[in-house]
Image 1 (cartoon, rainbow over the protein chains, first blue to last red):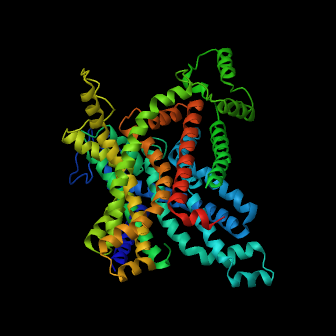
Image 2 (cartoon, rainbow over the protein chains, first blue to last red):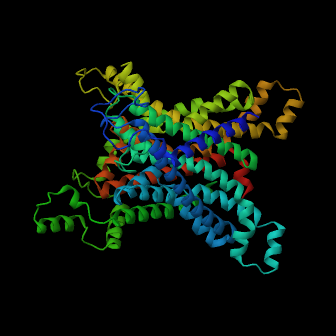
Image 3 (spheres, rainbow over the protein chains, first blue to last red):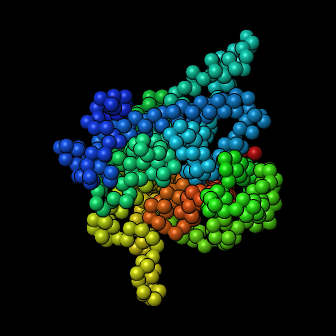
Length: 265
Length: 323
């Protein structure tokens, strides 16, 4: 099937990016923060992706940027999955007022334009890479919570859950040991797509200067630097954007492939 | 129907209160206070204390909140720290520019989403469907600000066809009404395209999924079995039902449109509410931030409410089915 090939293609690209991120110091030809030239230079044999406004090697910065962008995406999505799964599971399993309370909270969080909320929190804290991860995680769990709640509502009616209750399992044991493994499929799919979203959000934040701070390179803040040099050094803007695009696209392909495997719609 | 609307309206109240509490406390939990940002560090401490007292920043935070809430319920959202103008007035001046962008791109989105989603469901697996799918994934993977930058690079910088930023040509002395309208339209093309391309791609996939689901239903098989032409089956029987879920999705896409406005207006220097909001955040202009958050939340909640009402209206099963 075509979809499967796309997922495989995505997974391959993604593994490549992950390897690049892990082995960044061995791959880069130059120190990513070293000022090597006096000018922005177009891509050449010496500087594959050119140099930026401060004369730093864009290829080296992009390689280290992969590290930052992927880490931020991963940590943010783990936070969002943990929070979303916990709240969704509680709401779905217990129902009643627990459910109402949690779901109203979800409604409140969804009534914010999320980028504005994230920007506001970032501006109030000092923007740095750790805050970026936490804030993106804390503002993106709502979809997961709704999804997990739905799964729990379905699964808690099954007879094996009833059997578990009958032999006296505690609610915590039923929620985490009995139901969670059966709800894992959709959660993993949501996680893959969520990581794509987190990487996009990190890049927008860094682009606005509210995310990863220089001199640390992330693809988003490389684009922030590029904005002023659109005319003179367009490669500064094109390359980091293509990298974000490729990474996010790969994650979507993998996510869609998994979705089909798991059989959720 | 009436009780449904009333019930949903009542549910909106706690949501809005929740939004206001949460945003108020997030802002004020930050260390320091906004006076530090825009007063001279050498200013006399007594003067600073006076400014603080004037803005109510010397009170405990919950008092500040109730003070804010009391005023807000009477329609007074305070004055902007930077300009001293009432927040409502400042937002009202900027809102039309944002709505112009949003409504235009919303309409264009609809006009493209429905036919593309439907055709690609009907032609499932054919080259057209595959092309649309690839386009959708590409759109979802593109960061909005980067797309904006690239369009600007191509059409404004390289080709010089369209203005890069702003809403009006500041150099133009033309007083003619018509050429001013054309000028704004020229400035709108890039931001609207960016916004549309981004909301479009997710929605096409929803529309396609909705249409596919309907096409698998028994009544479509019946319609085909009794020999109706395919055209009638698709447009008269299937499409009507496939439009139902898109109503909700459109309501749900409002926050995205708003979120998009913050970034897109910042890139294209569009003088709207989104850019005002981003500036307010950078300046820690509390009253203005609160005003914009509340306005966005109201519009989002109302949008969802309208979507639900529209849903109940077009789909009798919702109205009569669940009590």
